[in-house]
Image (cartoon, rainbow, N blue to C red):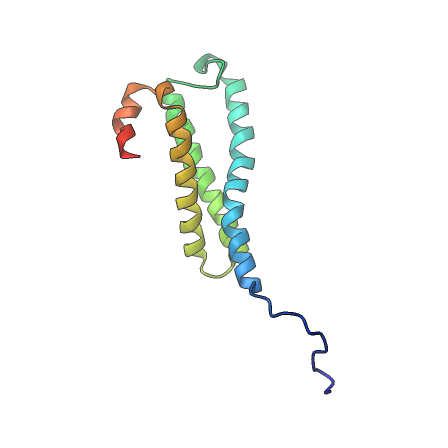
Length: 129
């Protein structure tokens, strides 16, 4: 055998490093989003308790705009982290993470549909989901 020849008889790996990075990039999105948004939402509720009920629901239009804006910002940050992990096809990984996060957001919104104000329900009717 030559000096550089492989002597192990391991099965060929179907997971390349690029594939592993791709999977980790997509999975990192919701994790990063949660790590940023949960503590931030907790701080907001503690700073402005008058705008929230005991289940952290709000019907205050200004607070809803702030929360939606922060959600968009945090989704972008999570997508950025995913893109940095992937290093290749960054836009594809960010888009995949955004679709995944959108699905999670739709599921959460459907759970709390009755707690949203009427104007918010008119913008996104329940039957569109």
